[in-house]
Length: 214
Ligand code: AMP
Image 1 (tube, rainbow, N blue to C red):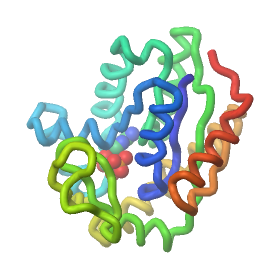
Image 2: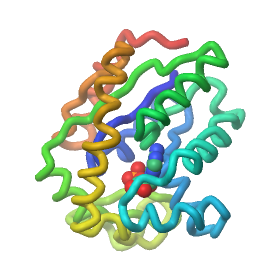
Image 3: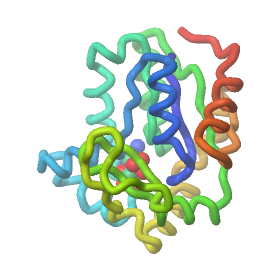
């Protein structure tokens, strides 16, 4: 199954992608995580992406598309994948459609997470992430070290309030148009993003019932 998680920053895509990966047994691919890793490793693409990431802007399509195509070409993507954070522009969506079309495949379902701006800002300003494995926490319930791998937790530069407002604005301008794009393709399912992660995952499981897979 080729599944896309769509929604503004802070809507819970990352948390749900981990639960979905365990259920569907396909890789969960986060472009944000891959870009942060490329920056940390100092690769050519990472160095180019750095200033966009820290200011909360979208990384140019050519860089992101190259990274995604390389990742989707690996053997573990043969039976499908969960895309977290891609596509984020109409051009990226067109490229993905063409890429899948060449393989006789398509996007099977797009889960669109809905949440108020107030709740998004609350979540993002309190968000903490593991430096090693990328696991996400909220400051109110965060352990001292990552539960999964013992790594240090930190606040991403782009989770500071001013940058958050900018990211939400960019989401509305550049990414929200994908809602009507995928509605027209008849693959969009809206998910109420409010509540704890299990309640949200239940909604996702219901939404996935009867989705056809190619
Ligand atoms: P995320 O971890 O999904 O919140 O992404 C963090 C940052 O990575 C975004 O604010 C962008 O700077 C960059 N990014 C992630 N995915 C994309 C994408 N599909 N297109 C452009 N930039 C992206």
